[in-house]
Image 1 (cartoon, rainbow, N blue to C red):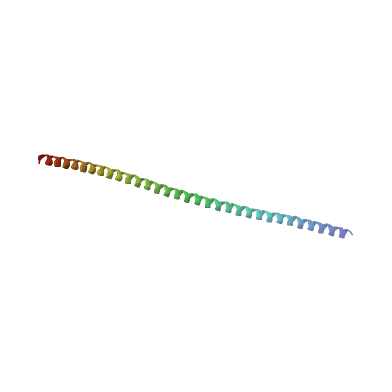
Image 2 (cartoon, one colour):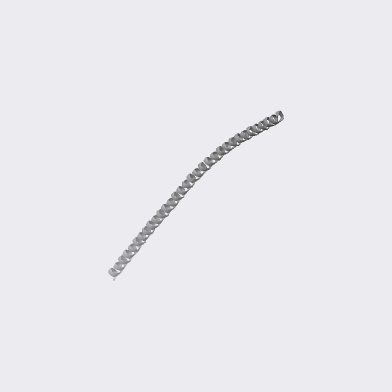
Length: 116
């Protein structure tokens, strides 16, 4: 009877050790899964951050190109305005000269008519 009791105690002890080791293994498996999940989340976050940084860099580059094109367009418009103003002054001088020539011709005709 004592042998049966000792055998029962040994079996209970073995069963308890198996349960404890199983619990330790389950904890290790959970910890490994949690670590892997955290690594995946961190990798996803890093990938998203890199994508956002790339988008920001592309947007800044596009904004710089747009600003450069706008500056060139403004410079071109200013140059065209200067050319137009210069041409307008030339035309005004030509019109003034033509008016003076017409007045001189009129005077000469009047003088010729008066002289007979």
